[in-house]
Image (tube, rainbow, N blue to C red; front, side):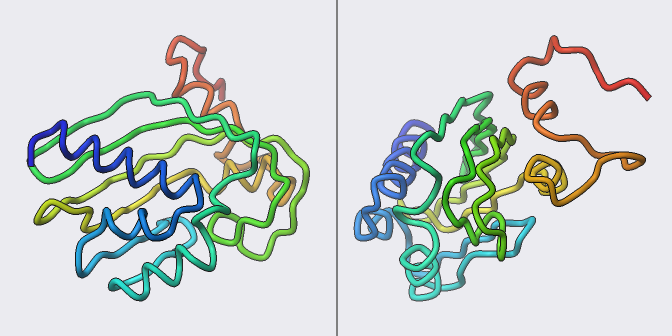
Length: 169
């Protein structure tokens, strides 16, 4: 696959997730995909496992309506695309893939994500999605950062704007 074909397929995949279109989302994926949201270990293995996860937990419920996604960087290799982005939204819906067992808090969340997407035979073969879960827990009030080497949304803001000053210790 050319770099542009991989990018276009990934963008189609994400657009379908956000639009709530399960069939189009799955049509972008290969025969034996896997999905791993690394901090929470949410996801699926195999076509039926991924479909069930998307259907029950993600597609159409990906983020609250006020989500804003800002691309920071993209790296394209021979078989992978790595997308770095910052998302901000208000936690107004249950998001068990992101905050399992946490009812909506109404809090504003800013978080940097890194999405590693693999491709095989012209389709998405896997996604590994990383984010700073400690920073998210600080923002929703479930983790007190005092005395801990963690912070909240400021880490995502620093990813989006590297000229912001570093943390003082």
